[in-house]
Length: 542
Picture 1: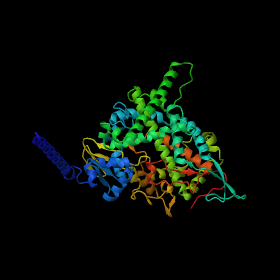
Picture 2: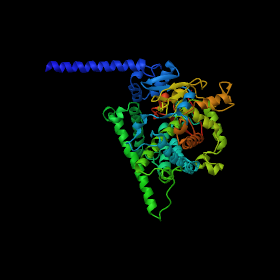
Picture 3: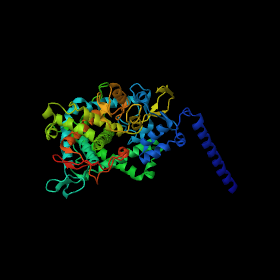
Picture 4: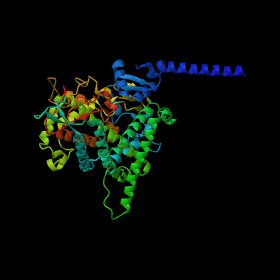
């Protein structure tokens, strides 16, 4: 009996070793992607990507790999990463023969709760997007501007608040005639940007603010979203973690945070659906507010004439998308822009001049854009502000990693290379945005690179250079699966940035500023501070 047991163990071990050796030989030498370079571990297992997803540096790893192996990198047994603007369009363009990879299954709360963002089937996505686009029409966005301005005023008040200290000959302040100067306690700008975007998205999506700018006890949801997004990325890179619920054992805190977020988003959707029901049943009640959720519940598919989102489960899935995608991308863009401006006095001076030319009086912007200028916020032209935002999103894109796509039957030609069906492909945004083929002085903050006729270090920016930069720019992705809420995000980023510039002179407190490095992308709650309120002197340390 003992001999038989050992024989069984030896046999199982021998077979396992044979399978492992055979798999390794096939994957490294015989696989259809064997000719493409990449690190050995990545070519053998997707756990290489999972490791970097856990550590939050996956975007940096893509950049490192492309710097070593060139424009095409095999980052998984069946996965290729491309680093070119041609590949960007070949993969994400409208006519590309790809679909979303199974990576997105990790985003589903259940198999019936795929949102416009995470649904894989192309026809189902087209139906969802046709309906959702009605909530992001020009008219709907213009109607939302007044709600954005309410929260911008609260945002500016928070930045100007804090305890006031009187310092004598203090480092970092300019001493007044009486030997004293007013110094405000630093305010964490990244946190305030999060609160602003959350409150704004609450108003726009669910008809109510989350009141994070005004009430600290409401801010717990931000951490829940961080856990949910991180869990989605980790499990998406290695689906068995999602399929067998292994994340609940290996990443308990992250998984628990994600579950709490799902409960939170379900509650928000349920409360908003309840409001719709009560309004519809009460003829004497006031008209239901036409927020995004209103459009989701009332929209009709223009192709079929059917109701767009007929089930509560679908509405819940879309509310998950609206909260995460809307708040995270906008707050990242806003915080990144302020960070780079604080470290670029040249750009700050130009932006200040542009904003003051459009809004000569300090209270104009917060008083209402349309009332002062006769134009909506979406139509006012602030080209240098737009360039500042684009340059910040180039250096610190909200989605820095790779959005995976699966090549469909028939294969695909990507950047001149034939790729077989079933291959996972993508372009990492962070890496492409720092590709010297498309951007001069690639690691430096130069908003001028987006403006024809401007100068960068003495050289004039040509139309060809701008077109090349735009062709490689993808902070919201591109094509049919690109960000549907880009217009709303633009307004939600432009308006508070203008108001901040108008009402405050931004400053870095010498002993309190925490420099935001490239990890701003994955750890956005780093310290970014403003200290001095207009008018009066301000100090920008060398």
